[in-house]
Image (cartoon, rainbow, N blue to C red):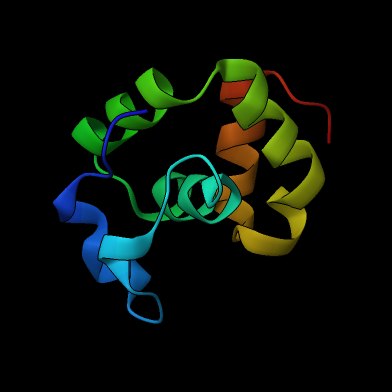
Length: 82
């Protein structure tokens, strides 16, 4: 797994950023990147996690963790049923 881009660090203020593990902390990392990520950070996200893994996260957690405009966008982009 690739290391988390340092540019995402401001979105993990309640965590020890250096201790985050892309494998074991994937749910939190996916959420923050989908919500706050730039194009470069989103490219990293999709290079690090499979489309299927991100789709599953959106199905399971999107309605709880993403604001409606973000959720609608990612459901459309990932072809996830609402």
